[in-house]
Amino acid sequence: MTEWYRKHLGLTTNPYGATFEWYEGSDSTKKAQTQWTPFSEKTKYFEPSTKDFMINYRVENLVSLVSELKKENVTIVDTIETFDYGKFVHILDAEGNKVQLWEPKD
Image 1 (cartoon, rainbow, N blue to C red):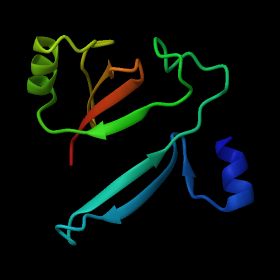
Image 2 (tube, one colour):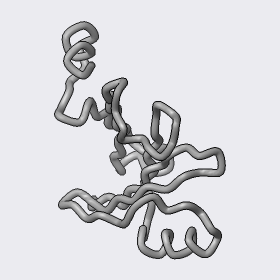
Image 3 (cartoon, rainbow, N blue to C red):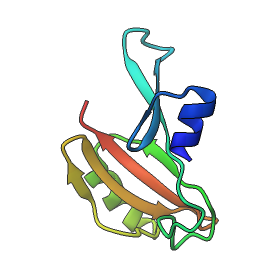
């Protein structure tokens, strides 16, 4: 799918899809990103959700947030993973949608 969008719509793609950069309205000097990543229709990456999409939210202090979410009985799908570009964890929202929380290393 990534290749199809690159070829036919001219998206500048990377191994994860395409990154769209923009500037935050409240601080026009602060760059932000929106990531678009297609997955195979047979992917199991979104499990345990039965939906065919996932939303990723940028957050601050992921460890503290996960601690608070646990207190509120939010389903935490996995453990926090740390990469050179930030920390990630997955949760389920009230409708069972898988949500990725990302604390970027800016």
